[in-house]
Length: 466
Image (tube, rainbow, N blue to C red; front, side, top):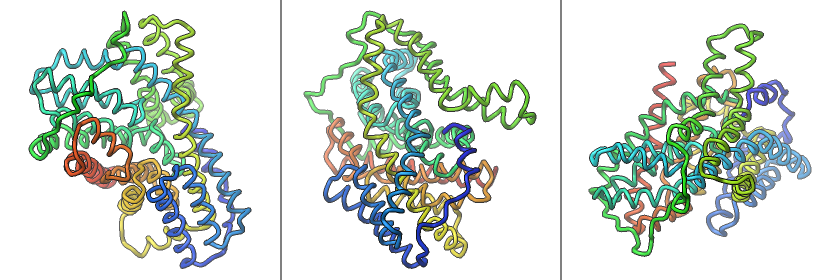
């Protein structure tokens, strides 16, 4: 979320509660709202956007708020969330589509694998997934990487688990912990965290987490599961039909540009005390997520699309195709923001803050547990992130910039816990890897749990050190 928007949100006085209900009624309202969302998504297979919208109304009514006020809170939260994250999600989708269609992703894969021995293939797959996963949504990343995983397993005489788990871990960690993915972005907006600090600490937590859950756990999963991909799954790649592809160095530089700009802004904020200086003002602009991602998209049109000999019409068509699939994601994120706002305006967030004082539990651990429960119940990491962020946002009151960022990461860590049969990602991995349900639980589901537990351990460790 752009720094200016965070400052404006932080400076805006909190609206009066939409209800004066007691803690018991508020607690029942929160449980009722979440229960309705869970049932609609899991039992009736309702789209998460509709489920969150209906659940927000139920929450407001049970809390004793006039329905009109609950609707106003919901639409206010939805609008604020879409305004802060919608454009960023769109830019990330455009960047990811250009990376995939131009063959830039394939260029990264081929270059890394060409310089990697057989013993280091799992580590190479982790690096590839992390690089490609920066601008891509998780489901898109899986579809893009599966052909690579299958080809590497065949050419390198490697088991599917040894190279597949590291790739999945790299994608999943980026999806849950590192902006500009929708979940972390929405949590940054809800908790009013500094995005640059969150990004820096997210990368710091992601590196050891992906090593443990990827190459290291992949060895264990290889002993538990012997996966054989379906015979009719023929690997195809975007660049197979292209005469030319972009170079490795320009592709990597383009992918890392927004990360570098946002991290540079966070560093300047710490080192440069004079906010009126030219350096501070320049980085305050170019380091905002909107400008950083827009710069990367503009650069990608020259470093990715042009070398692939894309015409202006094809570039325009590629951008157009990238925007359609994210409509549902933007609406889910927005509805989550609306649900969050109803929680906040009803006073439920403050209630949790009051209760937590007597629980003697770390706010970071509490945030992780809340996100974990919603994730296991709904199967959606994004829904878990934005719902939990709304519930624990009051816990950030009085926290330092660093600990507020760690609160975002704690929520993200909890949202990755134990993917199972109510998660679309579970079935996607099962189908592509040719596994049955028990095998998928022993590999993919356990890997997600390892990511969640390891990352919260590192988050808690950083909270002690920083």
